[in-house]
Length: 110
Image 1: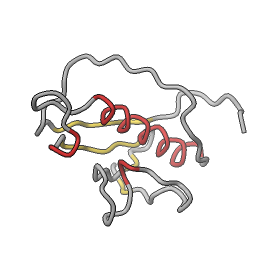
Image 2: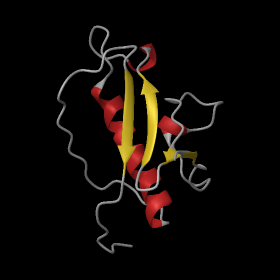
Image 3: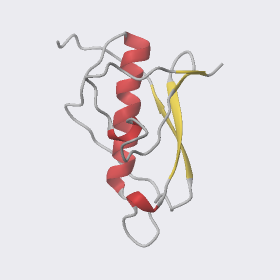
Image 4: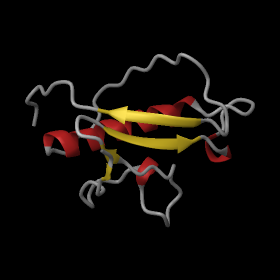
């Protein structure tokens, strides 16, 4: 069962899911029990090459999903120290994307 999540603490500034008054990607995350998820529709704001969403937009989606998963599933807020993405196919403007995040492991770093 999906239920809406509250945003992380105020000190956390997140472009993809920020306040409505700011330019954002409009993400709203939902808790699904073992993961968090959000849907996003690629629009012109983040266009890269000829009607395709820019790759950094996709990276931002994953980064936000990871943070929301840490808050919802591990009860902690953190930050990204490393990210590696393999793009399997382009995201066209107008495509609807489902992004999911979950906690796979914790390494105990403060």
